[in-house]
Length: 289
Image (cartoon, rainbow, N blue to C red; front, side, top):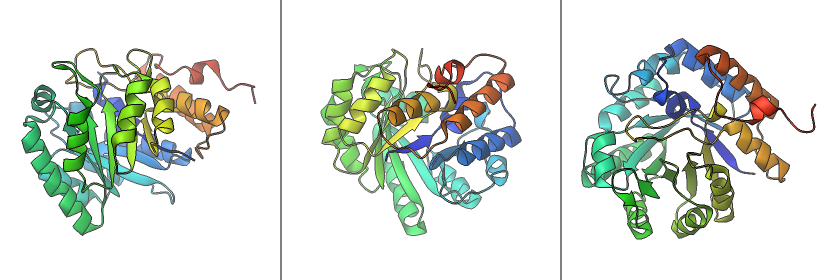
């Protein structure tokens, strides 16, 4: 069994030109939880001026119908964000630290050292508060401004973030290849996951490589939504329904309702007024039900 963390309501929607109202984003969270996803990244507690698609995080959380067996997470980049997340009552804080200085300044307006310091404070508070924590290392394989990232630097960064319950390695701009992903996953000593983008059509091969390397969680986004507003040419995450189809077909249990996921992608397509990047929701399950 592999745990899937659904990031569509946050990472998926943050790059959309259309801003969905909080009530709609809460409905998306509820539909995803109903499909059996064990973890859902529901909201982002960041500046609405910088990321207007994520405005109204507290309203999103208020609209969530909590389901047993689903862990609800949110993104925070500083203590102020964590204060908001804690007050909203989410189960998990996700904190992102970039592996390069250039991306850190663009994404968090802080140096890597400053971001690590902020993460350390948030992770310590989360542990005291009994809130689960995940530290995501963004651009772990390649940076749009500095190029390839030295794996040893990522390993060192993971060690500095050891207070987190889990480390997630993010291929933010979709440049990694399977051998690179497996090798880096194997070097992380804590429970480790992977956050993969399919920019260059290697996302699903990389997901399989991450599993072979010992990853216990994979991030994905319904319909393949996503990207990063601070990374040029960064396109969507691996699609949740495509990932579930691949894993279940190979006998890797996910506990997720694939037909339910397809229905959610169809609903999102109607809301956004365009086909989504995912493929299984358009092609259908095989063999057909």
